[in-house]
Length: 319
Image (cartoon, rainbow, N blue to C red; front, top):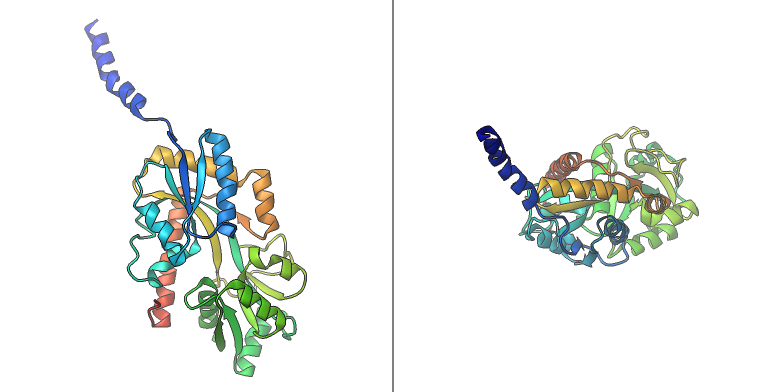
């Protein structure tokens, strides 16, 4: 009898601890997006939020806080309570911004607990229609023989600029940078032939690529795109280190309980693989990922290290 009482007493704290863990989510969840409504990252956030809301039976509200290269949103989530009720739908620049903006109040590696990289829109190297090249090798040869070619980007320190800088470093090409205020200016001038080449996200450039208004040479991602099956990757073109990945992923504030991260990971992966979501993303040239929290953490760490090396090579601080 005494042994039975002892066992019951020993088990009581375990039962109490289990019951004490509150159900998640206990109230509406905010998904903060560092970009304006209607953009690629916002679209992913809203598709995933709708699926999470269905799964959990609780509101998942997308909140746009655009500005400072998405740093406003990142700082807000980094400072939020680590209880799973404030999440960040992050994009690739989060791993680069510490080298671009001074005084940011978060660390991409330490301020968040990764949930999953949801999707990836690899960069596409495209050239103006009249440029007499059809492969990366021909482009490199032309740049070296002609004394250089021009490329457009959305500005100093942006992903398009840094992708072109990486290509220049890997190949020794002579490139002249022409910065624009936005992606629309880059695209229109590339179509018009005012610049020779540009890196563009597959999601934004797909209609013009498929229509032949600009000419794709290579995909800066791990595999070919279903919407452009004839276009090789840079790895297939002999440049395996030429990677430019515009991804979106879900992050929580550092210290969020592991059980909540696990719940969110399972739900987010199911959401991104839902047939309607998957079809929509793939039609835009995006790849569905849905990796593990640890895989996502490792990728963030690797990207930060790669950007550190890239900016060190540039030999200047961007402000």
